[in-house]
Image (cartoon, rainbow, N blue to C red):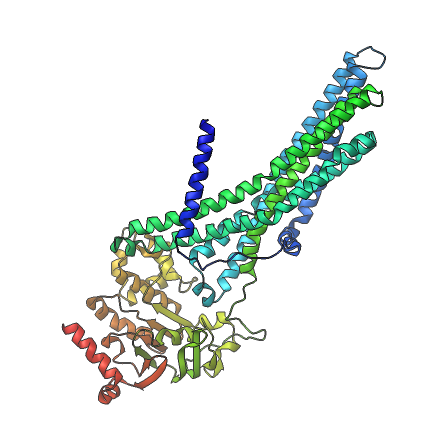
Length: 620
């Protein structure tokens, strides 16, 4: 009674949860169900990652397959002989000596089988983990090469789950799955042949249930594959939301939205749980199908087998041996069913992994791309048109020039196209129309590494990596010495605050530099850029988070930093852009004014209005 009540309560809870989820109108856009048939070529591609290890794996497969199959096929025969020859022989004289001999032989075979299994599991686990390592490294390497547009369209958590959870789902397949599959198939064929040889009619009668089992299980395959694929998608969305929640915890707490955020997480968590329950229930349905089939086969065995024993067509020992073979026959079938379920899980994950693997960078290198020679610094934008989304241009016919060593300031309201120009200069995106030239060379004709290694960028939202202060500065040039790191820090007036930290340059900082102030992080980014010594320098609101006193300190450092370099400066502060050689005023993706500070102030146009608005804001 209690069990029924609990089962009813569980079903009601699931039903209520499902209704609740259906009624909630929240939408995920990071993943879609991949509606593809079972793709054997994709499975071949997956196992292609094992090819480098085939010379190490093949001997193990052959040795363990031969030893394992022989021991499994021999033991039931020994039991049959022990009954017919030592326990109940035809002459009616049992032999204890023969019984001991058969028992010792069976024990030896069991020990061989155990030792073989231990060796196989250990060795294939090592090889399998190497394959997983290779696959994860290749996926991560490929993701590093993808363009900004790829990351614009996907949450970080969705990318994270492909590299972690989806690849982890392949571990069982790569470690023991392949060897077990081969061994079980060989064992299954061997037992089937023996059953038919020992007694053709009885063997055929017992195995008649196998086709029925496959007919029933086949109908479940597609549903199970899509169920596990749906689980992967739900987990990806859950990870994406979790990553977003952690990154935005300050905003959440500042606006007292913890309860709303927890509620949203609970909904997603419930969706994930229900998807897992559904897939798991379908997955477990293989077991009962095989058990029922085995039970029917066993009934046929003893019904028909007892008739054969009574009629003298079969001995008792042979019937017992036959029963043992039947037990060993259903065991690999059960494992093959589980293996197929495991394969479905792996296919759901591999589809998502290869979806990323097959993603092509929207910004790629031409086959004939050459290295960019050492940059002098002449930059030219020719009739640039660019749009992040079709039909919504962010830049409309932009043309501008910067001579080597000049400083160019980009000003304008939010959304006017300032950062887009910088993104095109670094070739994070390619224009829809027009060209970007550096020293007269179209940047699409050179390798990305040779271009970006000579362009430095300092962002407003400076990213600080987990590690030491020294390592974060050295990120600008990994082969820099400790003395060069310290010189760069001194030049931007970061040395003093660094030395006040507990371990100075060896102070560990966590992700995004949580122990540092915004201004301190900006100073580190200046030191990083100075150490890189780029020919073209980009300052994207780089002084927005630095207080006035600190800004005065780094003005001299900026002069040193900008000397001899072409620079593009995005800034609202007058002190940063007053001395720029050319100020480009943007509005809705178009250049509306350009000139130096004095020229633009005399025009009393858009730039003049921006400066006046800033003065009014500061004096308010």
